[in-house]
Length: 594
Figure 1 (cartoon, one colour):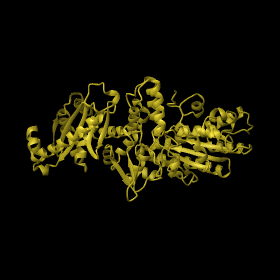
Figure 2: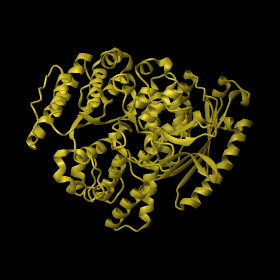
Figure 3: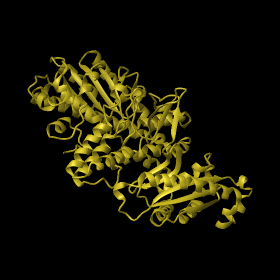
Figure 4: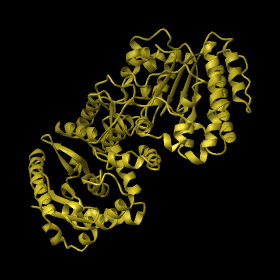
């Protein structure tokens, strides 16, 4: 088996024996619309879809159709439009976003001109008679018009493919305040992006650009250039395209079964690997009306390749190529309403409810902090793949959630840096956390939270001062998805444990403990004392405060119940069980259970 990790060349994948989940049956559905906009998170297979269309419709690849598509669904029943277009492909991820608006315009023109030169050279080489296309390096729009004039002299229209149309604009937008004017110069009034899409629209009306397919991550740019290009049909919310990119669970299982057989594992290894992949990679739903969550394809290929070559799971389940998505969370963390949202989303079971997902947001929303309400923030996170659809409420609002454990690790990492910006202090916290699962000693971690984390909470006066506050502090320090399946709010017989850390099945050889923690929070006024009084108490004196003693007793009962059920479920745990009680933002008490 060969896995096309990092490969988006459709011809190479399907002619050189790479693994491919056949999505060519979607081609007839895509033909129903002339001009389309398809949005998915980055690293979710959009470029491969464009490559599929390029190979299917390119007139110069007519003789290769059987070799490329013969074994696929569309090869057995092709449409009338197969191999009937010239293909012009633009990839805006190649445009340098740095520098002034003038410099970005030059970079964009250089890319377009380069693609037009390649277009002309390729089709001339393939034997197609094309009049000379005049390329103007100072004016790519002139070059584009020359291409249209040349194509008009042939029997073939153009299928225009634009990949990552919003990439360089999104990159610019991440520097919002310092680059706002530069971005406005690109998309507003007679900015180059708006003018470019006006030219494309003009060419579609003349039937030279007969079809256009555009991919991107978000509708940020399209919102600003709508008056320049208002003919794209958004297909990203349509149920029939929910699985255009991504793998179904059944497809994932079939691959695992082959790898398990080649590695000579027992059949039980299939369920183990599938459970691990489901925990880390499943959870994406892009359209209401679709009933199946799909797996991130890049992460799956990353896992498959490692599992197949080494007959072992990847040590780190997060592919470094997706780690850059943390920059989107950093952007949200800088916004006044974003911090609380990110903290809430560190909890795995937490869902966000909004009235609707914004289908467009432009420069004003991106530049004005006042307009960044909850709907904007949640929609932004949805488009960038760090939130996904989770259904509807009874009153028909939209529910969204963190898709899986890999994405949850990005939230945890961002919240940790947000609350503990000093890397030296963060390292101290991580060392204290290691003693919990290495030695079964939670005291150093409780001391760290009491002395370092609570200072942050008091200074910021967080509204979520409760068990969530305490759990957030411990979760961000204890989080370790290399060793553990981390589960905040794990359901056990319709009840929820606050934090469970179950050693990954492939890591059980290590000398570490499984961990179960129940958190409680007691307000100072409920304990009948001031902050100064609380600071002077010893641990023994803390535990004798009636309200704290009560909460420890309640937590002890819960931990024993949850622990017994976890033991029955897994059977081979080395479980360390704790109850942790916070007294305001001043003290932390704890009890370790046998």
